[in-house]
Figure (cartoon, rainbow, N blue to C red):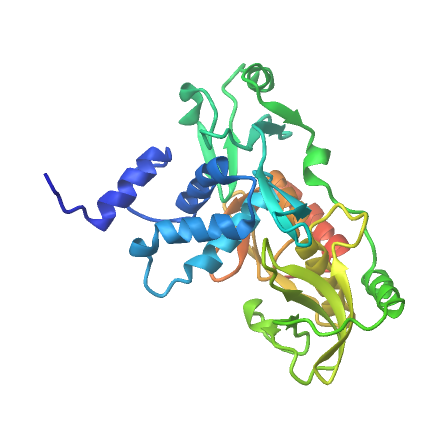
Length: 355
């Protein structure tokens, strides 16, 4: 018997299969859970493979006015930042001359929070949340993060180890770099540029225009038409995520280019680029700002510029990531940690607070 199924019924069924609360919404929790399920089946693969596969399967359900591919790219970045997906660079594809960035599904792991809660990371090939059934209803989602709160008297750490989850230390999970001044970061990049020869033509190059006076992150990515000076740049590649770098231009023509990540770096190219751009903005006396609002028992930090995964992971651990409102990402920070986290954002990323 053929039956017509409504859009809401399809989404509700998918949410049930993903272990999500009842509903007919394709919210952020839906996309995170769906991408984890897909990653368990497709990884290792390029980030674009995850995005295109998820977008393709939802083509008939696409929301009006929403750029689904951009939204899914942000979700994949968030899963990398929180540690559910592991990003590897210079992976050789079938064409040995082409190097790509691939993502791998992290194995089931956990990080203990000082409060006694456990952050659940990774996935199994056939299960995006490989926890015992009795524990699944206790998992709380905070943006891309999944948190398991302990019961009174429960040895949560020991139970997770017994269930096959690999423990990670808080320091190993955060992977923060050493603090460095904005001037030192840019001076180091300028030194690397000066030592290079001409870069040649690079097609489809985009620059992050530091001359634009706008809070919109996406609006600052432009073609390098007539621009002079040094800029953070990105360009697409045949396989994998976009390539990032730092380049000098003359009248819109590329002269020299430093690719990110530089050899020996442990950080993603985009993370290096974002920190460098924040340093550039600080040196121009136009530091990026974040908004702080009052919340019950804490403060809400609203970010208008992407954070490197190590910074995002820290704020998600000290507090927790919450749904954003007219910004790129938001975090709820406990009152007793607000001053320390504001100092961290200023020292490591040159961000200024606006009350």
